[in-house]
Image (cartoon, rainbow, N blue to C red; front, top):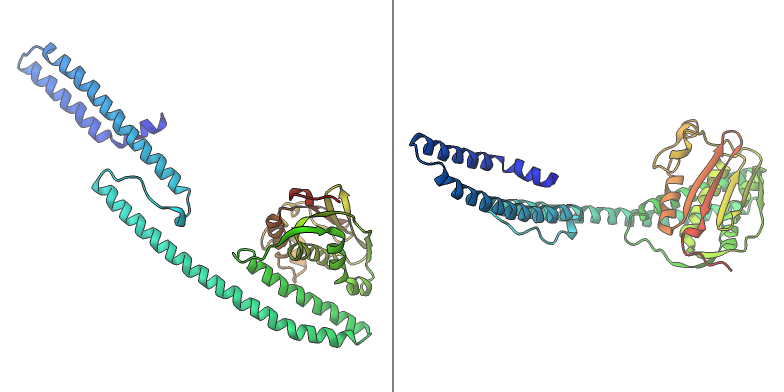
Amino acid sequence: MNLFFKYLKTNKTTIVFIILFIFIFLLSFELYHLPIMAVIYPFIISFVLGFILLLISFFKEKKKHEALEYTSKLSTAMIESLPESTGFLDDDYKLIINQIKQNALTEQQIEYEKFKDLVEYYTVWAHQIKTPISSMKLTLGNMDTDEARRLSADLFRVEQYVEMVLTYLRLDSESSDYVFRKENLNSLVKSSIKKFINEFISRKITLVYEPIEYSFITDEKWFSFVVEQLISNALKYTNEGSISIYMSSKNVLCIEDTGIGIDKEDLPRIFEKGYTGKIGRLEHASTGLGLYLCKRTCDNLGIGISAASTPSVGTKIFLDLSQYNKIKE
């Protein structure tokens, strides 16, 4: 009904003119003292025919409106055709829209090529920088000193930042190499923990972990990135105490620390891009990208991620593995 009133409003000029002509017609009959009844029947017939034509015109416009409404929800590339033209102005509009579509597709292709070049550049850069990193790791691995262990930990963080760059770029890339298959959770977690053993030892942080017998469908590389990022965060904000990794319920993996925690007002926004909160403002090294990348990756893996935290007590991060076609052994 609202659409019909909008249609009447759009055509109000035509309707006003029709009413005006009818009034002039009736006034002419009155001034010439002609019988009004002689025009009543033609008027009624004309009114009924005019109303029918009005409805026909309205339904044509309604159909066009629905087609345009549907088209407006499509991406530029998906718009194949517009509603049939009913006048020369429609032809002009279609010409303009098609030109805008072509320009948009051209710009989209240009931007895609730029993004592709950027991904390729940083991919090459990452592989190149890993060579000296590996060399330094081998050198430091032969030195059993506190300084060497500290440098090894810092070098590992550099390696993590390189992986974060690649992850950030690949998230929106069409070539993201997801390979979903049945994985053993215990193997993935143990492999991730192993990378942080030196930091646990050097900083005297207790690791609480018992083997987990659980299998599910995921991508090994991307899931490991999430676990490693969460362990890294836990270590980053835990000065003393412990980090525990366990199943908090049947299908939920929990990574818990006894760190500085997260303020209540910051907790709902920790997965937002670039959001660092109060803790991040104190820790100048915080970028606000780690948890954002975890959330985006989990979304792609079909895994739920959430957090609970108490300042000065610690933080718990939950990974709901049941959200993606789990297979329990």
